[in-house]
Image (cartoon, rainbow, N blue to C red; front, side):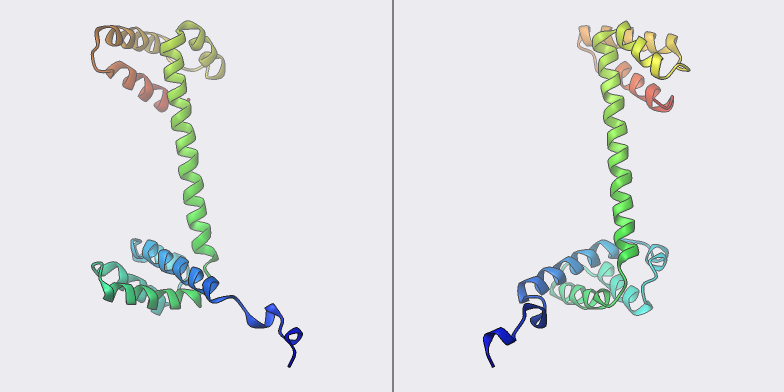
Length: 167
């Protein structure tokens, strides 16, 4: 038989690729083991797979747990994991959106404290229903606290007001 007779497709994935795949499944097993039973059921996993994953969650880190993770990963390899990956992607996207909103609120608070009325005008142009009097009072108090070296309680209250107002 000549070397041309062997195609890469016939050989399948390399040993290193199979190891990476199994490691990814073991990592997934560890993440799934922290979930509730109802969450695991929502993914449509087989009862034997759910049981193997739950067992990992009950065990303390040890060589026995590592063997159980490998066992559960073998079960996961036979499952349709698209709903699981979709759930993690959605969770990551929600977390990223929350972080963006948090940073946007911080930027508004910092602008209000740094720029004053100019920033307040910009904020009111984008969000006309805000309580201007409360915002101005918190801005003044935050400036006084900053000048006297007190903890930034008013700045935190301003942040909370912006967050609760839907900015």
